[in-house]
Image 1: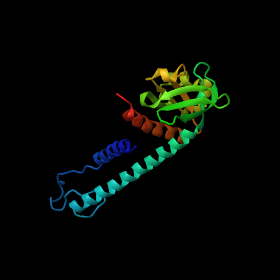
Image 2 (image 1 turned 135 degrees about the vertical axis):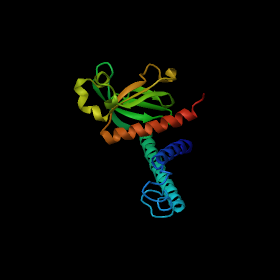
Image 3 (image 1 turned 30 degrees about the vertical axis):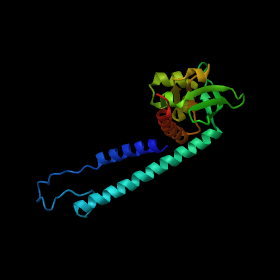
Image 4 (image 1 turned 120 degrees about the horizontal axis):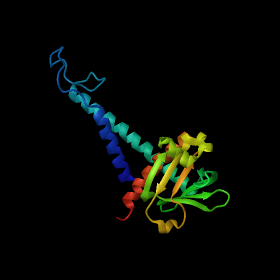
Length: 206
């Protein structure tokens, strides 16, 4: 995932730089010699402060990148073995106990019934078109995907859809409403599947 993480780290670095811009003109209440711009919270000379700030920022971004790498690594390892979840059957809006699992090429995420073992949905990572928490959808779509009886699961539910290679998916739906154990697990799913989507898209033939 090195290329993906480099892009994510660069994006976070530039975002942090936008926040840390300082004024370049002296204030009106004192001379330019005493009001030279410095890094926030630092009493060091400007050049030293900027160097220290950059070094600290680089370390912080490296830690974020390492943490994200670990999260995705652990998520992928678990998903290759299979993780229990619940999906909402699209036509009846009833809950089905299921398992989501990555294939060995990490290109498809498949959902199978826990009791039947039948494939209920299959999503091609490189062709994901929708990956969103249900609570961020308009109310009419929330009811459409969850149903009124499942509204209590709103904060831990998400919608996942893909297009692309329908031949490999067969007649299996490529859109699924997933209910995870809790909000934390849902947010982890959203983050890690998005990273895997980027990786799969980079690796997919044009």
